[in-house]
Amino acid sequence: MLDIDVIVSDFDGTLLDDRKVLPKQFPALLDELDRRNIRFIAASGRQYYNIREQLPNGMADRVDYIAENGALTVQNGEICSVEQIPAQDIRAIVDVLRHTPGCYPILCGAQSAYLEDMAEELHIHSHMYYARLERVDNVLDCITRDRICKIAVFHNHDAEHVSYPALLPFAGRMQVALSGDCWVDVMNASVSKGAALHRMLQQMHISPAHCMAFGDYLNDIELLQAAGYPYAMENAHPKLRALFPHTGGHNNHAGVVHTICRELGISL
Image (tube, rainbow, N blue to C red; front, side, top):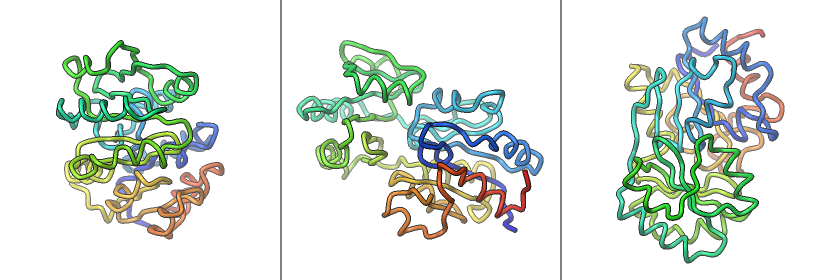
């Protein structure tokens, strides 16, 4: 049986099934983790306010958060860090995206997210991941209104071959992360889920050797590297599975819950 103090899990494609639903066993698991004094961290490219909505019935106040792919962290209900992007970098990235057909930038801040256009497919996807989302005439006007910590770029079903290559020139000084079929996230170079987890473990005085982590996509690489016990989902990106051979099961079959129960000797 593993000696674990912290468990961190990605959400989409990992803890949530393909319908974006939590495993029915998760509330009971969280109760047991609380009894064992094991802290659960929700890690996602989603907005913090949106992640909270996925944890109803009081669960949201019982976990910590790595949101916006590590650009924003929350512990004990309070925002602890916001990795603000310099204004000149935001302007340069938005300019490139405005000249790349089919790409829609969303500026993600500590208080809300902001976008200009609302194509039908973007409307569906954006409201899935953002609880606070404001449509504005010019997203650049939001730089002075909020602390922008991530630029999420939407391209319908082909982010890997359209928006991602367009943004690669920024990869030398920025973090450019392919975070899904439709999404690329751009953040400060030092930002990742893994860097955020490392800081949180230090603040809690917990060794990575006592941490389990679960993920399914390329933006989870650093997260899994930061944990002593990393698990890639059966449905994970092939590159992630090659790096992390221990499986966390399939997201459509409550793989995270079953793996935690197996490794920690929990019976629900």
